[in-house]
Length: 138
Ligand code: RTP
Ligand code: MG
Image (cartoon, rainbow, N blue to C red; front, side, top):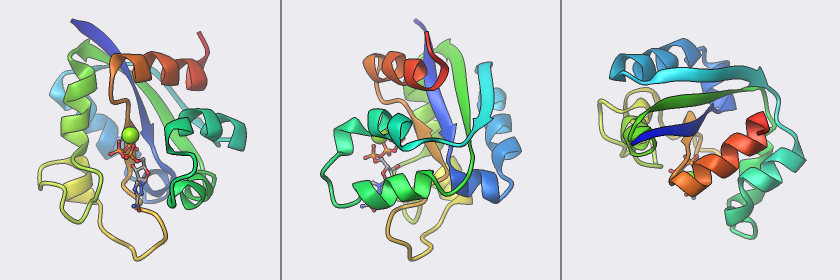
């Protein structure tokens, strides 16, 4: 089924100049970029985006990290793109994410309070619809 997913190049990816490589991987896989913009997040947007994590020990450092510089917000489109991009991104912890994935190839542990893992990708159709609304409106 043709789907849309919300991808964020997080502040670490933007600062390290990896946005182009990350977009190239999305396109090389065959997905289409439907929307793209660079923005600096706000606490309000992040409270909505990360509502499921509120109260967890990594929540506050995660919000601070996401406010530490601009992010690139992308809507990508294609059959099964939600699962497909999660697979391209690799598992959450970049130290052990598989080589060949964005996090596995380009990420590492920097010894900071929260995992800086370059990208976010929606994890379900419901999350994708919700997150696209948060970052791009309806
Ligand atoms: P994402 O939502 O960013 O696509 O990543 P994910 O599904 O793989 O990870 P999730 O569990 O949703 O966590 C959201 C983000 O919080 C940071 N995190 N740090 N223990 C930690 O240090 C920790 N756990 C989570 C990561 O930046 C993760 O992507
Ligand atoms: Mg997640």
